[in-house]
Amino acid sequence: MNKIVTHFGIKSWNEDDRPREKLLLKGKSVLSDAELIAILIGSGSRNETAVDLSRTILKSVDNHLHDLGRLNVSDLKKFKGIGEAKAIAIIAALELGKRRKDASVKERKTVNSSSSVFDLLQPLLGDLPHEEFWAVYLNNSNKVLELQQLSKGGITGTIVDIRLTMKRAIQLGAVGIILAHNHPSGTLKPSMADKQLTKKMATAGESLDIKVLDHLIITEKAYFSFADEQLL
Image (cartoon, rainbow, N blue to C red):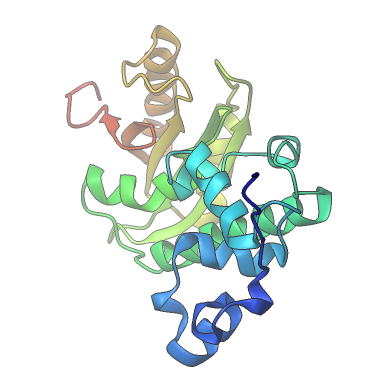
């Protein structure tokens, strides 16, 4: 005799186990990642509850929310029960979480070491699939006047306009600049182009009394500092 498997939806669960009700009764902190995602997608498929489907999605990225944030709409739609609207909801929620983290990091406006610059910029650059080049403009107390994206490129490189970088420094009244870009490949070794650009930027700054204090290469979990390695 074949075994009959009966599938029950979330509404048939004990109230304590329903993600929405659980959040209302016990607070958001007690919910698992899968339960939070289940609230976003609302329903699962014919064979999985929303929570089970969320667990399946998380398992595909080894339960790392950071890696989940890298998935696009097409990636998420590969899971049965996830259509375009649900995929967009997941992506939007993760992006909001990232922006919230960015906002809290940016409140720390003074940088005094390469590690503090890494903390400031890693949320912006650490997990990008393409290369971006940024500048941190500082006053004479090392307080951040502005973070500015100088350029956005492909997987292997980007182009930076030195004149526009210095023009913005003058407009802000900056006395120092910290350069930073990410390496999507994960390598921390500076290329010859990285070294040449750093030298050109430092030379341009000298004539304007604007000091290039550092240049960081940023990856997901680590960084390389030109200043720490005495390359400036």
